[in-house]
Length: 127
Image (cartoon, rainbow, N blue to C red; front, side):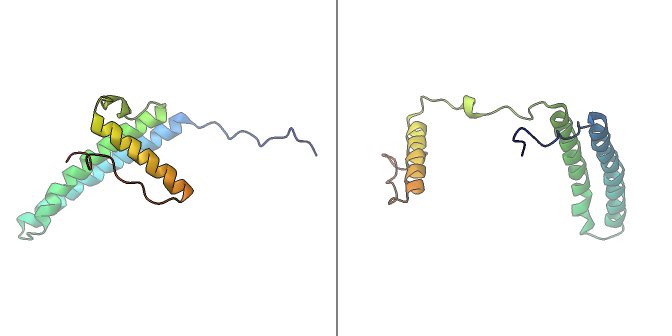
C-alpha cells in the first residue's frame, strides 16, 4: 500500500453562490415580513386582539433577518463576526482572579475524580 496517498481536496467554495443564497434569504424575509405585518394588522383592526402581538413581532423578525444577513455575509467573507471580550476584562480584579483559579482547580479535580474543591476565599464573586 502507498502511505503517501491522501483524500482529494474538497472543491473550492463558490463565494458568489454562497453570497447569492444569503441575499435571496434576505429578499425572502423582505417579502414575507411586511406581508405578515400587513395581514396581522388587518386582522387586529378587524377585532382579533391576539393579532396585535403578531403586529409587533413581524418587524422584530425582519430586524433579526437583517442582522443575521449582515453576520452571514461577514462570515462568508472570512471576517471575524465579533471581537473576543476576554481582553476587555481587567486582570487586576482580585475576585475575578480568585474565581478563575478556583474554576481551574475544580476542572483539574473533576478530571481526576477527586473530592470537590472548596470555594474561593471570601465567598462567591459579587457578594
